[in-house]
Length: 99
Image (tube, rainbow, N blue to C red):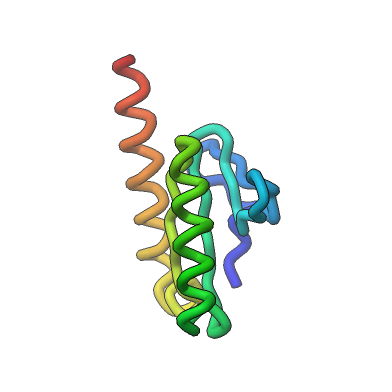
């Protein structure tokens, strides 16, 4: 699996397994207020999807964006995943440079 924690994406540092309220984010960057969640097979049950939705809602309600990817996307479409993250970071920085 790609290690977002050690990889620097446009000078953004990501921490892994970061507590945010009562939840644990897979990866978090305070620089751009971004959580990245990588969901494996255990996330596809109705109960798990409900819990993931509540987690996302809680995190987004405190002003942090959540991007979710499946294990398969991270492993097989790494370039696309990294581009999605890069696009978010670029947009975040552009928006905040105007304020």
